[in-house]
Amino acid sequence: MIPNLTRGALIAALTAAFALPVSAQERPGRFIGRVVDHENGKPLPGAQVALRDSDRSAITDGQGFFEINDIRPGLHGMDVVLLGFETRSAPVRILSGQTIEAEVRMAARPIELPPIEVSVRSPRLEAAGFYDRKLEFGGQGRFITRELIERRNPQNVTDLLYNQPGLKVEYDGVGRRRLMVTRNQGCTPMLYLDGVLGDNTSFDVVRPVTIEGIEVYIGAMIPIQYKAKTDCGVILIWTRRGR
Image (cartoon, rainbow, N blue to C red; front, top):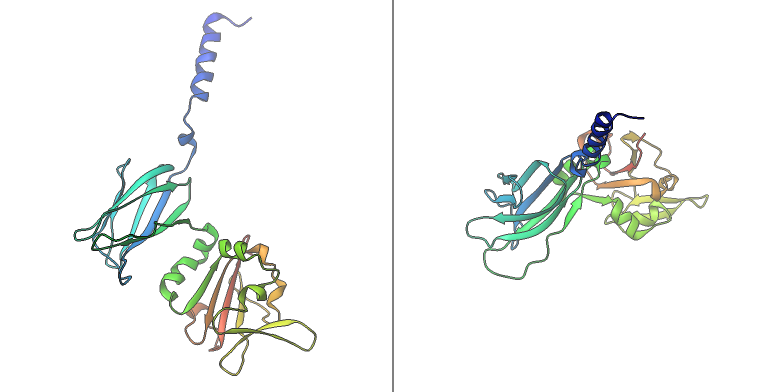
């Protein structure tokens, strides 16, 4: 039989262990984004982005970007304030160990604005530099995330890419579908699979269900590390598991 004192100490220890809050087992989250003018899309520097029920806040830089780190997971109220613009408020759910991204549009006068859409960044694509290139080449490239792939539910990669601007699908002599660039006399873009130059004779060897994201660059505007001496185009496919 356990003595009373020992039994009491054991009960106290077990009670304390089970009483640990769930938040103590969670990792802080990260919130990033950009604040822009609703009328013209120009960045708004100097805007304050604050999470109402915490001490976390940030000021947008010269390009309108902000970053808030070490945020307790859960639902937070966000306020974005800038002199001369209407204050914007919205709920933001921070996930444990995840990066949350949002674009906030502000109006200089009271108008009806669309709701602020918040998305979760893919750690896989973030590590591959997908989002950095999206900021740098956003006007010259096309960026397809897993969410869009799942909405389209294509059977093949060519089903997903055939309607991208500057691309078309042709059949070779053995019935395989090939992606072609409509200009430059119908050349075939290079294929990089998880950062490695691959065989561009058949893009459909990759199953869409395994893909985390796709980048499409047509013409000469190609990231330097993937240019591979081609002015035709480059398609980067990032799988969920990588190499």
